[in-house]
Image (cartoon, rainbow, N blue to C red; front, side, top):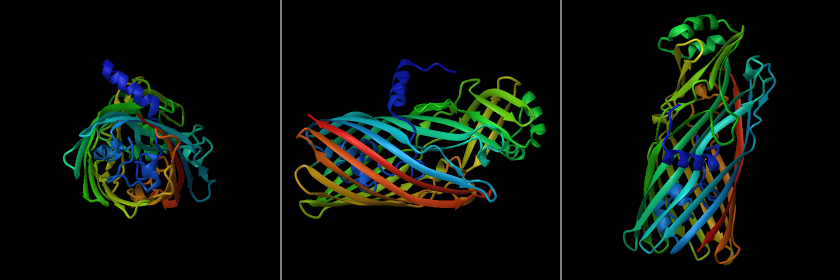
Length: 440
């Protein structure tokens, strides 16, 4: 494995310490970053929402008060995923609770805001037992765990009394575990190009196997067996159109991370009949998509504020296919695999509002509606990112002038689809976010 320099090692360690995998629900992205946004359906583009603004629209950071702010957050994600085929017991994913910490700090002057934060961006995953039909009789469980995190360096400016602009440079990280079983024929159908070496010579014999597996997993909550790092960024602006109406826009660039790789023996291929080989998996060009969001915030009166966003996520650019290379360390040779995805671009509408009941308490509620980006034919029980809508609520409470607490809950009702291979998949989810903020 290549050595990485001290800066990359330090930053990666910070991501791994606080950016575990997120089981996301707008495709592979979270429906809301920060409890203020989550409680209002994920809307976040045109109003101040704490240090989460560096993940949402960095220009909103300039809307806060002069001084410093530290946010320490914790997300708890609760997916409920089941898969079934006719004549077999239902397979329930045992991955039902995941923790996702986040941290943000900013310093604001009258004209400029800067800071740093660590956030989980998104991901997806499931975990099925060895006795499920998805294990294909291989005697071992199947699972997936994809996580993406960011270390964010935001900067925003006050152009004039009405306009603020901002941007961020984001150091990004991705990690993946996968334990997948299929029939030998199905695995052979994913092979592309011409396999090489002794491995290539052995593959035709595996086509008749009752099961075949690709496995790479370290069972860590904070890092996948295959990892990669890179950079991306985002731009944004907020315009105060009137005393009661603000408008926002933000564009998030597609990530630019390297291929995800295990170490030289961090993966294995196996099949019925005793075939077993160790080697390296390389996941080719797996990126998070670009997106563009427009939003508004309308102050109806001194207590009530209404917010709305519309976002376009460009999944089609990054999820046409899932491509892997397996390099044998034992037999020698390599083989390429491809799993078609053909995701569609996704439109997300977020609506919400907040009501200030007193000087210390604010109540929030919202709704998030998105299209399902995955064509039914290509839905995989290991990656069921099919949820379409969320009902959200939350609150903020000022403990002191400097210390506050935010909380939010999001519930995604059950969605069911049937894949091209005849597997029925259902997915519901209830997520929570908690945040302690300190201003000084």
